[in-house]
Image 1 (cartoon, helix red, strand yellow):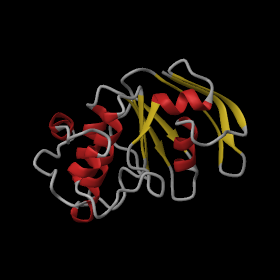
Image 2 (cartoon, rainbow, N blue to C red; image 1 turned 135 degrees about the horizontal axis):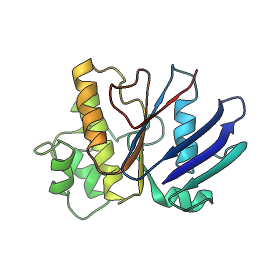
Image 3 (cartoon, rainbow, N blue to C red; image 1 turned 90 degrees about the horizontal axis):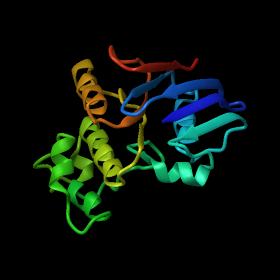
Length: 185
């Protein structure tokens, strides 16, 4: 599903090689400033690498990769509109909120809650729901562990692992279970 060889953005993150199969969870771990978000954006076709090669779902051109990869919540890139409700966010992409996708991500009954009232975990869940609406081959999610206690982090990792999708997610501290770990320093 994803094959990256010697992928890098000079001065942002070092060369990374990875192979992520269909339905796997790849975790990108590193401290703030290590290039986690930039690596995710490169894998999603939104940032041009300065070195290496990238193949995502058989696509090598950035434009085609962008169509195959959906961004869940990526701070500063896919920020939620704080004045819209969860349902309105989904409704912007479809005529009406998709109850099935809300249930799938654990937000059933939250469609009328404004984004400003959602806690960080719920915001990430909404970001995943929005990504699922695109019916992508790959989902990327950033800062999965940001500001959450261990049990809530684990709940998000369980969600991402159980999506039956290829997922690449970034964090500071990796979860206990994953299919592949990429550590950036």
